[in-house]
Length: 112
Length: 115
Image (cartoon, rainbow over all chains, first blue to last red; front, side, top):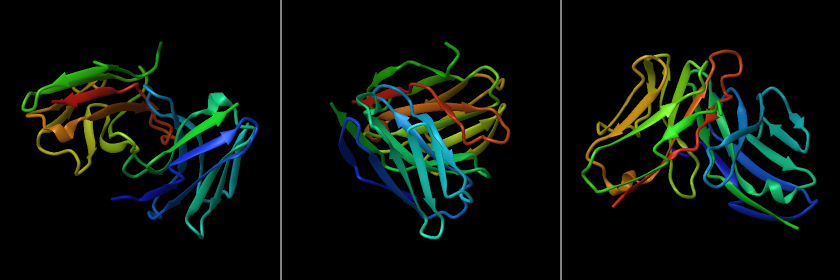
């Protein structure tokens, strides 16, 4: 049962540009909305997370924008670098079940 | 390296055989999770342990799957009578119970190929 929908499936951005990945969720019981970054051959690594009562969170070049009424949230990567090339997953975390529900992923390629 | 470790990293098996994977969490973490990731998809939750107790199981975890964490440290995931549909990356994660338990640390995974 797909509860977190993610787009686009793939994204190519020039070095220095802004990468934007969008997600929508259905389950209003999520307690946090984390973003994970995954490189080939590695497990996902937590990048940044936001609570549903906050509209924006920024950590370095990474910003989450959250729209609770629309049940949508997005990741913005400012000044994208080739080292940011990876697959990004948005997710919802349910504290009651200790379960992370992942989106389908966005493969980001940052070209020089 | 004090991260989550998983063994083996790759496993090729024939349909019908049993396989077992091992996960060693970060040493002080009392919560341990198993996820399955198929190609081009996000990881899907399978089960989670707090210490040695298995507290949550997904409907994805059929009767052929069993997970254990006997002493609250490492965990094993066994798949009996493997099927081709079991081919996937099996990921283990761990966390420390507390305020920010959404922060799960993932291992590199075990890639299973069933021929």
